Length: 401
Image 1 (cartoon, rainbow, N blue to C red):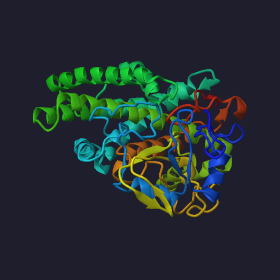
Image 2 (image 1 turned 90 degrees about the vertical axis):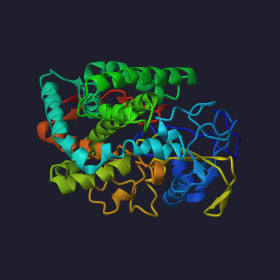
Image 3 (image 1 turned 120 degrees about the horizontal axis):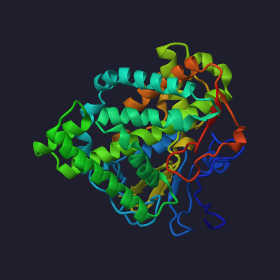
Image 4 (image 1 turned 60 degrees about the vertical axis):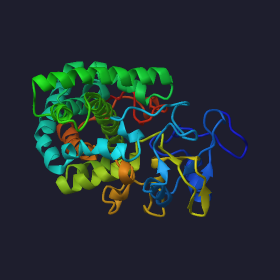
């Protein structure tokens, strides 16, 4: 991607010799020019890059910034990205965003997620048991990190797990920057069509799951069948892709810091704190959070004009030394780790974060309890990291135990 001498091209790449850290360019910008221009689409657009934690939170919490990708200056992942369906509400502003989000609020309350914990524990045990039956080395992503959140989101939504290959394939197109806009749109359409059929199935054969309750809301006229299908498709996509990568990267991180593993095994309170630090340290929203100003806004002395785009590289803001002491260190006792922006901030903060937290809190201790001799089977520089995707992760992770 080209750029002018004064406006660097926005790049996703993390350093090859430090693949869990942000690009040194953005670390330097955060220190010297925390709100600066970058170029997208081979110099056709020059959005602002906001790298400090405080400034990032100001943008994310302000109604003066829109998530709608249809704005002419929107710094979208792909050029000419249209506004999506209502059920994919992350790309909508209020009142559509609030209405769609409200249909799901009860599904992600702490009580509902606590009811899901026994199922997460059972699925974790089953997958780890199956893994230990293999003769290794085995791909930890294929045999554990990917199927676990897929099974959990299927359990929550009421989606048959035997269809997991279908939705995983289409989810990849949505997070791959190299996928064309047409391919991404087709992936959304295919997922939505699948869920539309499932809504009708649940209407006739109800269960104790999200799709059944969305079908009931459609029957009451609160939403349409298409809304119910799109909401389900959005959750299905978002509910496994992010957590799968977080499980794999957390495992790599802890294996790279073996002295921290006893902390993970230290009980519920210690695990909860450790998960927040891992969320801060890894910050897997790799492509940054994207916004467009709908009015002139001045932040930290810089005026962002209406119509100008903003990119917030969360993994850079979450290592801001003004808030986090020694931010490049993995400190599982970090007192303020939960102030991270890994789930965003403001009205668009990730709705599914209670599920992600529950999965990580259950899964990570169990991995190292069941597999105390777990090791990565290849040198770190041979692991293929996902540099061109919305969500950072690894393609595969060969392990032995």
